[in-house]
Length: 106
Length: 274
Image (cartoon, rainbow over the protein chains, first blue to last red):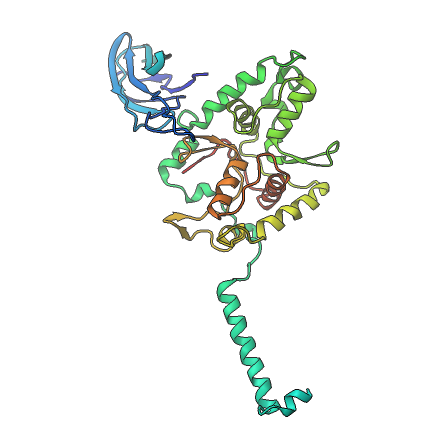
């Protein structure tokens, strides 16, 4: 049940700096922990996050085991034209999630 | 009295000795066993929210930054999913949760006539599953049970906690007994921290009054959502007391008492706590 919460303003003025907030549901298992019987719990993390604006990459991040569960990533960009933001998370065990958000630039 | 007269100590000096001994004993007792001061006055009650940092407050306040909302989203899906031998979803009986579940989180644990005892939201969901959906009960703290209970609790956000049912009274007083009873190797009662020393620090962390206004809540320490029972277990472990199993009547009594204690305070579910 991977789910994500995205906060992109629905409308913005041309040239305005807008804040984008993303939150994805993920356990971010570090790979350093053991079960009660001493068996190592394999690493299961999101390793990469990429945000595109009308197909062009505007932000990306590498994620590591020290990042807490349910990573919250926020960044800003300049609203240049109306269109679509696409957010992609990829990680261990073939984890992949994609979300989109639309913006109208006036 | 005859023995006293035969002793070398005069009756007057004997009485003074007893008096001094009593004072010393009382001083010793009060030093080691402070007397509980009783309930926090209604106007002095504060949600733990007010003791949090600005960052954590912002996280709770904004739905797209509050990780608890991930469970709310899952809960909404689970609410509409048909399950069990009856092939029914929660929505098939209860309709749209924003209308029908409004206020439910503010008045649970509620009295169940059939059981003659209060049940909390998690137990109510499992009763619905086993009796109406004919599906197996969900495990306590499982993702699906937390998702459903936070989805229900969320519909009461901002509403004042209600505790008016007279049938709950014996359970409130049972909960109060547990709350004020010393237990564990540290010989502490819940009330020692949460009634008498809230606002002070314990290991550098502010002690909250312990009002259950935001459960199930996202605790940064847990990195996940958890129920009030999980939080109560945390406290019991901290007191080095024996924990009750999930679903034990002692927890429900404590929950019922805590909701009475927080009556009138607004629901924050899903809250975020450090």
